[in-house]
Image (cartoon, rainbow, N blue to C red; front, top):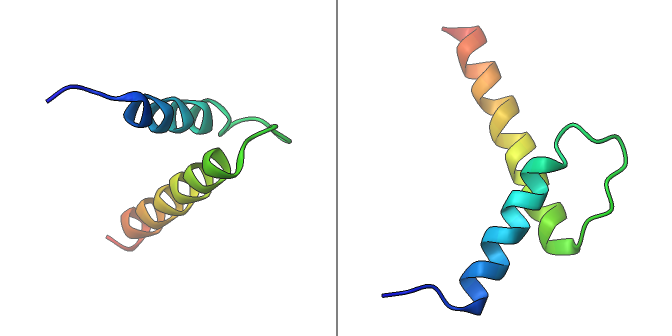
Length: 53
């Protein structure tokens, strides 16, 4: 099973969100903003879990 345009679109959005983590005011699409928000929440949750261990 290969990738279609939708898969590439999502992968590109995830990569753009990952690249924008360090930027102060990135210009992102709604999809990219959603991925960025999820990445930041996951990062904070993991940091909190390590702190509690």
